[in-house]
Length: 285
Image (cartoon, rainbow, N blue to C red; front, top):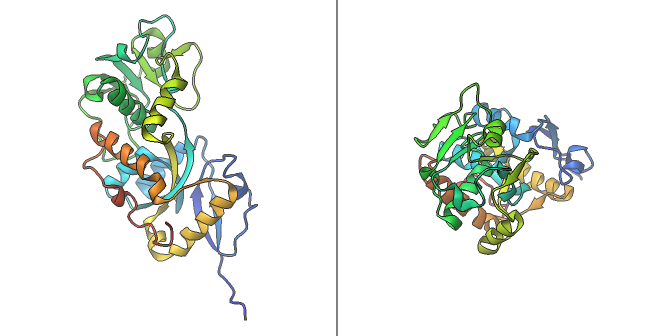
C-alpha cells in the first residue's frame, strides 16, 4: 500500500536565474516540498530580512553575509549550492582620466564601496592583500550602507559617507581613487586592473575556484525538525540546473572566505569550515 506524503510549503527568497527557473516556475515536481517564493530584485534585498528577522525558511545568501551571521550566532544552515559566482576584478573601477593605472597605485588610497560587508568587496580586498600587498586596514574606506548583520560595526579604517556623497560620483571625480561596484557596472569608468580577465585567472589558478558570491541557506529550526526537506530541496535544485557541490568541493572557497573576512575585521571571531556547515543533515554530503 502506498503511503500518502504530506506536501510542505516553505517560504523562500531565491533569485531568478537560468539555473533556478525550472524550480521557481514549478517545472520541478515534488510530492514532499513546494516553495512559496517571494521574489526580490536584486536578491540581496532579502538578505537583511533573513538575517535579522528569519523572515524566510529558505533564502539565497551572500557568502560574506552568511559567514558574518554564523559568527554572530544567527540560526541558519548552509547548503552546498552556488547560485552566483564570478571573478571580481572587473568590479573595481577608477576615473577614466585618473592617476590609478593598476592595483599598486591603490596603496594607502581612498576606496569607496556600498557596504564594507559586501561580498564583492571582501573578495577584492582579500585579493589585493594577497597578490599586491595592499591591506584593507592600510586604506581609507568610505561606505554608504550598514551590514545586513546588525551587530557588525565598520572597523576603524572605515567612515560613512555623507548624504551629499555618492559612490559613483566619488569615483568619477577622483574623490575616491577607486570604487567597488556590484553586478550592474556603470559606464564612464575604467577598471583598476589593466587586464581583469588575466587577474581573475591568476586567482583561479592559485586557489582552484571562481569566487563564490551567493549560496542557499535554510532556517535552523526547519533543518532540525525536517532534515528530509533539505535533502528534497537539494534534489530539486539539482534538477533545476543549480551548481551543486559537496562540503569538500566547497571547502577551499569557504576556508579562504573565512580567512579574508577575519583579516578584514568582518567577524567577531574566526570560524572553522566545520562550524560553517553546522546543522547540515548528514544525508547531504
